[in-house]
Every structure is written in C-alpha cells, then in structure tokens.
Image (cartoon, rainbow, N blue to C red):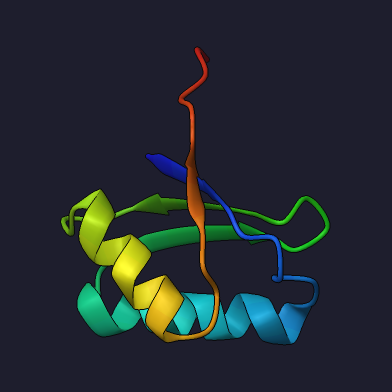
Length: 70
C-alpha cells in the first residue's frame, strides 16, 4: 500500500475528490483517506507516478511517504 501526504486535503469533500481522482486511473483501487492527518493510503495497480500525476491534476499535489513496518 502506498502512502501519500496531501497538505491541502483538509476535509471530507477533499477526501472524496482525492478518491475520485484515484478511481479515474484505477477504478478498483482501495483508498483510505485521513483528512485530519492529511494522508491517503492507496492500494492500486497504477504506479506511484501515475497516482501522483492524477492527484496533482485534481488539485491535490502529494508526496510519497516512506513505508513503515507493520
């Protein structure tokens, strides 16, 4: 699962927009958005660069967060 920091995702509406942007490139993606933490976790067949481009195009530029051990 990829983790991204999205500084301007501040509310549920933003989270829905982020989810829609990801689903536009991978309709089967699994998305967990946390507006309070400004973080989104995505499980997708799309690669990281495609996801970052889709998020930026939707007005939500993001940066990849390092993976953490479970």
